[in-house]
Figure 1 (cartoon, rainbow over the protein chains, first blue to last red):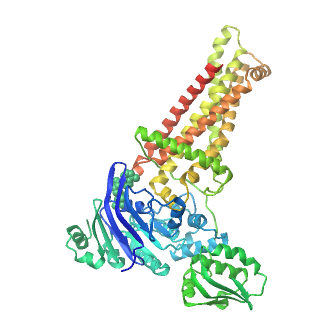
Figure 2: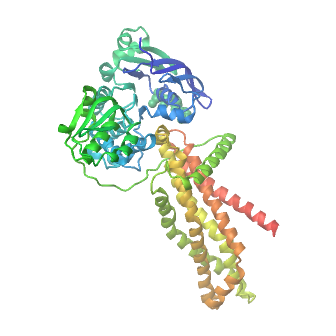
Figure 3: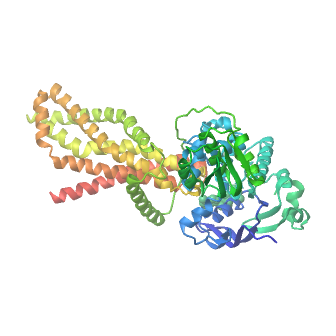
Length: 246
Length: 357
Ligand SMILES: Nc1ncnc2c1ncn2[C@@H]1O[C@H](COP(=O)(O)OP(=O)(O)O)[C@@H](O)[C@H]1O
Ligand SMILES: [Mg+2]
């Protein structure tokens, strides 16, 4: 059995008094595509943000690259973050900057690379997501799918070991979202990344998933391979795989 | 990196961690005759390494197809990441702009605690930011200063003028009855310098800049831009708030001075047309009665008003709740709260100076 690259143990997450996630334990394995499933508002985004300490977990432990991160100091954790790319649900491009400058930020922040080298890296990453023509546009000039691809280019700017995608296909038409799946798969193979992806698209799941994590009402309902998920007796999971809805 | 028989030899890792040092080292070799780059012994390479190789190739004016000696691993990475095969993109830059949204409300005790943390953070980073611009957007202070200062000047000038005229006219009728016409200069000078100039400017800025600060930050919070900044190891306060803090600190004394002078000019018009004073007499009288101390009090408190606007605007912006719906709500709350605290501060200030005199 491979060693997990992310390991979550007994994680509890709250917003104020409200408990969103209760006692979540799961492992993410290197080079795999792990799909996080669950109804809207069940806490998928919360789980990701707690793993990345964008919100401090209320209890439990998170290990990334075999290091306990929950009480890690900021500097050390920045190093960990620099090895993880995140595609936020809304893209989260900085609206006041051009696409080029958006992708430059992580490169300027996390490395001491010179301007010429950074410029070449940005152009290559934009080419990988087929967005070269939008290099000097601002986010408002892009369509939803283009924004996602630009955000994806930013997420892979530093050649991350792990890429996390929060509902990449949300708000996109089926064709665009299918091509985004293909793009993510292509990048995974090119860059040798571990992928964690939140999605509801049954078609994409069949196509890309190695492992399924199913969250319901803040609890972990199922955790196993795609094959196991298709054969499980757990009612909610079964229903989802039959009809593609929760 | 080593020079051997017309070839530049690399071994070990060629990644974002090792490239900066190699890049600094490269000029040592750049005037040698180099025909090939030998990458056979490279054990690890990433997109930064490839970009570096491409950069060297272009500096040495070498053709990548002929000058690279690579092992299999490097070749695969090179084909993925080389920028030499890219189509040319035209370089044209568009202007910055801001989208605006927001929303929020927090319970009282926690809000005070959060407020104090925020004030501490903003003060600390604003101070550090004077000396070290890392983590700040280039040119953002100037851009903000233009938005806060220049764009507000027109409306502030107009309202100060009207306020000056009203103030002088209201008192002129009374003063004339007692033949105390000249005192209009005392009244206009002292009230504009110590009170009307600062408070009028602050209230207009609260409406214009306070609302835009709150809504900009709230938008960034809602669209996860703030989280994205944190992911990239950028302190959001430093990136978003500090430039505004610096800009408003630069602008406020200029705006208050403009407002004060224009208000007094309004008084001068009334004095000349309605109270039969000459302009020289009026101006000399103003200069005589207004002390340096008055000017310092007026300007001094206006700094606090400006900081209140930034702090309250960012507080409400960062504490936005829910999605885009609460937008108008948080913006309105920030403006109302700013004006409230400006007037409270002004009252405290008046009390202090009243009892000290
Ligand atoms: N910043 C926040 N403050 C308070 N509650 C939140 C916040 N973000 C999300 N929630 C709540 O937490 C629950 C889980 O949200 P989320 O993790 O975004 O769900 P999803 O699975 O759709 O990504 C929801 O009920 C949501 O209303
Ligand atoms: Mg979500």
